[in-house]
Amino acid sequence: MSRRIPLASPDETAALARALAPHLAAGDAVLLAGPIGAGKTAFARALIQERLARAGRWEEVPSPSFTLVQTYDDGADEIWHVDLYRLEGGAEAGELGLDEAFRTAICLVEWPDRLGRDLPAEALMLTFEIGDGDMRLLTASGAGARGAALAKVIEEVRATHA
Ligand SMILES: Nc1ncnc2c1ncn2[C@@H]1O[C@H](COP(=O)(O)OP(=O)(O)OP(=O)(O)O)[C@@H](O)[C@H]1O
Ligand SMILES: [Mg+2]
Image (cartoon, rainbow, N blue to C red; front, side):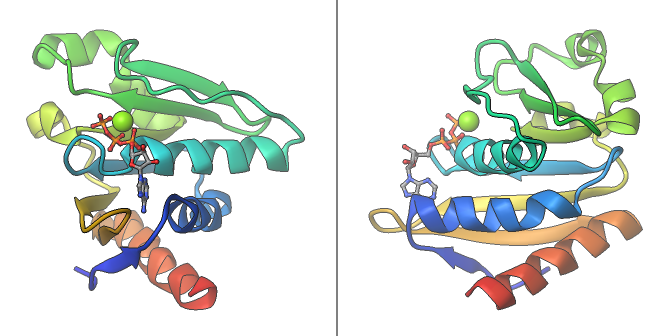
């Protein structure tokens, strides 16, 4: 478990997300936890748009809070942006096709606690807390070897971008 990383503005959150973007590969899962308005979508949007930009692409990245899943193609990998806030139980999670996406795509998942035991064994968990004003506090932790490696990446990019 890392120290809490202060993110003083939406720009700082976006910068950290853009720095993480090139380190992700197919099969990676980033779980985005924290309360409503904490910055989960803001982080995912910046990460996705960075990967699209590196492929010379641009797309709007709306919150998937109503559609549950939005998918993107960055030319190399499929990206799944998922918001499970409205998920109605495990059966629905299965219908979304998340199991396969966790194996084949880069998955960014808001409200991952809704998955219960269906969480991927290897994942980077980013937990956002809301501070005063625009302050957000981020804690990075990793499950499994790949999750730990990605948590280390967060610490490293944070050190070089701070
Ligand atoms: N430091 C910051 N980092 C990220 N967002 C910030 C920050 N400061 C203020 N904000 C604002 O907080 C809001 C975050 O909204 P966002 O949709 O990303 O939240 P969310 O965690 O996805 O919420 P939900 O659970 O409803 O999906 C935005 O309006 C954004 O501009
Ligand atoms: Mg959101």
